[in-house]
Structure formats: C-alpha cells, structure tokens
Image 1 (cartoon, rainbow, N blue to C red):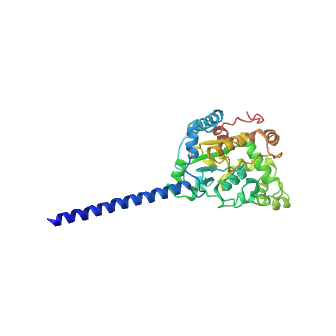
Image 2 (tube, helix red, strand yellow):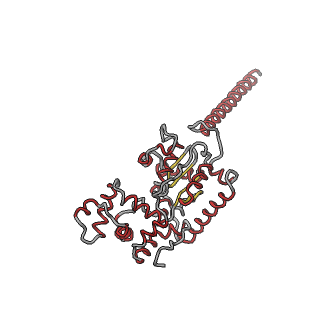
Image 3 (tube, helix red, strand yellow):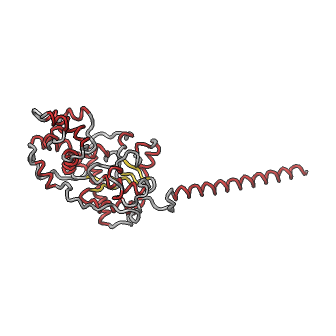
Length: 339
C-alpha cells in the first residue's frame, strides 16, 4: 500500500520541478525580449515610426495629408504606367540604407541631399563615432562603403521583415534640375578628376568632332550638350548602367516594387526631413542640416542649360526620364520646346 503513495509523491515532486522550470524559462525569455526591445542604445520600448505614421497623432494634419496624397499619386502612377510587376532581388536594394535602431529604410538618390541624409543616419546609428552634429562629418566619410549597411546585405527573411515593419522613405527632385546639378558637379568642378577621366574622355571621344588630344586625355571640358548626347545615345546603356548620379530614381529605388511610406521632395526638403525624424522619434537627437548653398541648381538655371539643346534631343531626353516625371508628379518643364 505504501508503494502507490511513494509513487504519487515522486510524481508530484517531478511535476513541481517541471512547473518551476517553465516559469524560470519564461522569465528569462521575457528579460531577453525586454533587453532586445530596449536595443543597443538603452532606450525603452516605443512605437515604431511605421506605427506612428499610421496612428497619425504626432504630426500636423496638413503635413500628414500632403504625404498621404503623394503616396496615393505614386500608387496610381505605378498602376497606370507599370505593365508587369516582378520580384525584388538583392541588386535592387543596394541603395536602401538600414537604421535598425530606429526602424528606418532610406533609399538614397545622389543630388537629392543624400550626403546630409547619410550624415544624419550615421549619427542615428552610431556610425558617426564622436560626431554628434551631421555637418561635423566630412562629406567624403559619409560616402565610404560599409559605413552604413544596405538592405541587400541581409538574408531574404531579414529583408522581408524589415520591408514589412520599418518606415521606408525616399527623397526625390525635379528630374532635369537633378540632371543639371549632376552635370555641374561632376563635369565643371576641377576636383572631380576621376569623373573627367572615367566619363569625360569617353564623351569627348564619341560626341565631339575633331577633339584636341589634350581634351581626349583630360576629359575636363565636356559641354552640357555633349553630356545630353551621351545620355540619349542607345550605345551608352547597352555598354553599362548609368552612373548613380544621373540614373533615374525609379531605377535606383524601385518605387513600384517597394511601397515607400514617405516620399520627400527636394523642394520641401527641410519640412519633409523634419517629418521623417519626428516619425522616428529622433527629432531631439539630431536635426537635419539647413541648406545655405547659394550655388544650388534651380529651375531657372536648368532652363538656361536646356536653352542650348535642340528640341529633338530635348524630347529624347524627356522620354528617357519620363517615368520619374510621372511617378513623382512633376510637370513637363515649360522651357522645353518640343511640346
């Protein structure tokens, strides 16, 4: 008779130990989870930027409405002008930079304040070292490969999780202003010798009748007309992809495959940058640098450059950049003469 009683006692003790083990494991898991939520910067759990965007209670309604309108226009343009959808591949994500601390994905577009946005992300992610002010970071350091991680570096599962749960944003600019800005920066500045050698010599060789030997050697006096001839020449893209400084935004950031939550514009740069930082809860941590450049490329400046371009080539160039005009709701420039 004693044996069943002993067995019951042993069974009860085993069950008690099992229950205690479960509670212990749950407690450890909770602590690990809490620790992970706090993150490397020691901050407590908070709403993600994406949650803040959808809640819509942290930003003025007019700003919220403006950005909602941009998203809807982009989605409508994608439906209207994109015939066939495809699956994203890692190659598509090389321009998408990741901030795991704040849950941000930023697709950088050269000549659309990307140097300052990279500086801001370096401060936010801790990649800036001792620098706490974005403008304290030398411009060349902001562009060093590997300083900020890109989405293409992650596994497929990690990519999909970030695309679902992080705030995705991109900044765009009137396409021809951006193009003129790229030309002025890369072909009229003496310090861009690498671009002169890499692209200037090729442009001079192909598109200048009877070039001087020194021009073929240096490639430092490319005219805007020659640059346009180079862009619209079918052989250019057959040979290699466009350089990122004049590649179309839709080819860099794939806005019809990646559903961007915020489409910032260069024309409203400071307001839109503040909006992103507010959504990220980082407006007290860093401020987007104000622009004081008197040399920035304007619409009037672009008009002067295009005044020298024959209407035939204006039309060919517009067709080349047409999708950027359509997707981001930019009007055909009034100074173009083919319309």
